[in-house]
Image 1 (cartoon, rainbow, N blue to C red):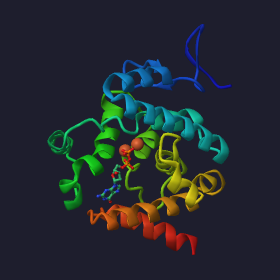
Image 2 (image 1 turned 120 degrees about the vertical axis):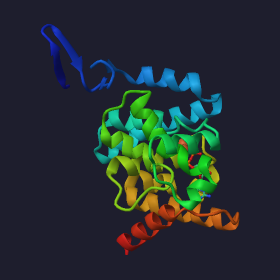
Image 3 (image 1 turned 90 degrees about the horizontal axis):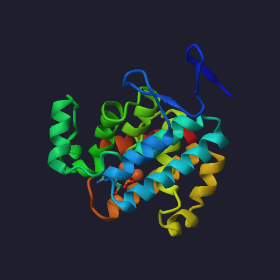
Image 4 (image 1 turned 45 degrees about the vertical axis):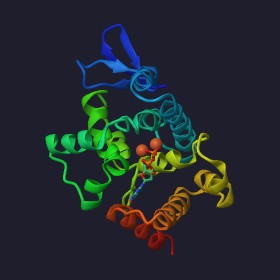
Length: 217
Ligand code: DGI
Ligand code: FE
Ligand code: FE
């Protein structure tokens, strides 16, 4: 157990508490859950708790920090309730460059980028690694960190997701054995699904897919 001195006679267990940007205080995961419960729909909130749980398990198995993984899991869709217009406005406000695909599909693609901003601004997350995992949870990116892969994969396999595709391709099995293999399977399914729907595919989704397929060969 890690203990960090705050002041004399006052210790914070940093296995359970995250440092926040707000007045040097600490927060626990329950605080973040409450924040999400108050802004997300019931269904989206349940999804977020599911992602949190799977992030924890994947972090344990693959040797990542469980607290940071859980926090990223709870917050990953914190900007999912925003409208297309609001997401585009926020991108302008925070000087976020956006691709043509992102401009056309803000809700699908921009909730992750704005989610990372909100995690910092509204929920006080200071850990860059957590912010990146939120930022890239929808498209992934080439050479993701372990934490980024954990959130990307957990989002897809959490228990509230439909089990048929996951079972057909043994995606849960991959997730617990080999994260890169799970990332490839998920991107394969997503790219096929988007092609079948004749939906636009973001260049970052394709770059991630190509990177992991080549890496695995
Ligand atoms: O926010 P979630 O629904 O939990 O999941 P997500 O953030 O992974 O994905 C949001 C949606 O965006 C989901 O329906 C899949 C879709 N998506 C991911 N990459 C692309 C995409 N949609 C399009 N059109 N193009 C993409 O490249
Ligand atoms: Fe999402
Ligand atoms: Fe999600």
